[in-house]
Length: 208
Image (cartoon, rainbow, N blue to C red; front, side, top):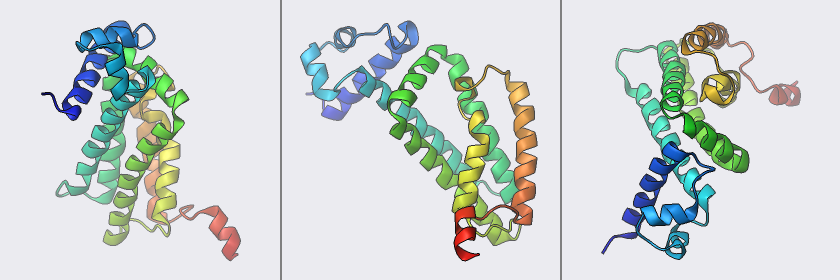
């Protein structure tokens, strides 16, 4: 007998194939049920609707991206500034190629982001935690002078959001995006090293 988790993964795998071939909007739950050799009623026992399946696919990809990025923290022989560079450029290149290789995924990602903003926020939080740790490592080594790593990580993410899944924001080629990101990175590192603008302005107002 197939375990529930196995059936769950079977549905996700079938949905990935159909979404990538036909697109999210042209796929129905009835078609997915046929692909999974089950009745539509049985499919609804595992997922309330097509959007829930799409969200599960996107969450799986988001968690894998965060896991890949977290390995930057343990790469030997890298300064905090280099780890930050690795983080930003890995995020850009991996997500760019993922969407270029599977253009129909862009449609699905846009729909999930619009319909389930809390999902997108979850992914941002996972990546922001890695950013915060990089900044803390920089503080420990003396490279950075950041009084509020959480706030700095939040602001770096806000400043570089365009470069994470960039096809959702622009159709610029990768070489152009890399040039822009390098410039943004240089400005960010200069700020982290000087300690400028790395404290939450609301806290400054409270303590002023």
